[in-house]
Image 1 (cartoon, helix red, strand yellow):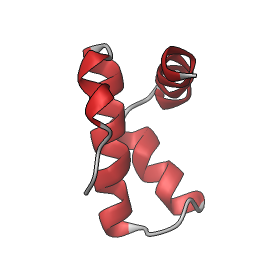
Image 2 (cartoon, helix red, strand yellow):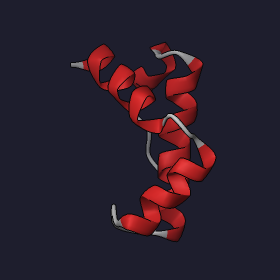
Image 3 (cartoon, helix red, strand yellow):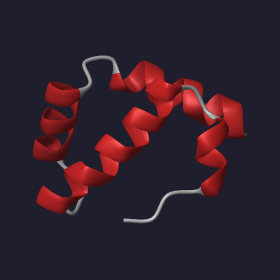
Image 4 (spheres, one colour):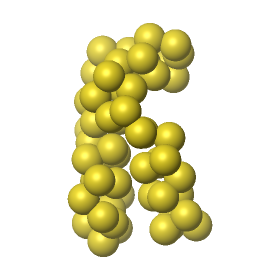
Length: 58
C-alpha cells in the first residue's frame, strides 16, 4: 500500500478514507460494485469525504 505523504496534512476523516480505500483494494482489485459496497459499509459518507480530499489537493 502506498499513500501520498501530503495526506498527513488532510483532516483525519480524509486520512481514514484513503487508508480504508486502499485496504478495500486488498479484497477487490478494481473499482467494481463489490468494492464500493465494501467501502460504503466502512465509511457511509465516503463520497462526501472523497470530494473533500480531492478539493483540498487539486
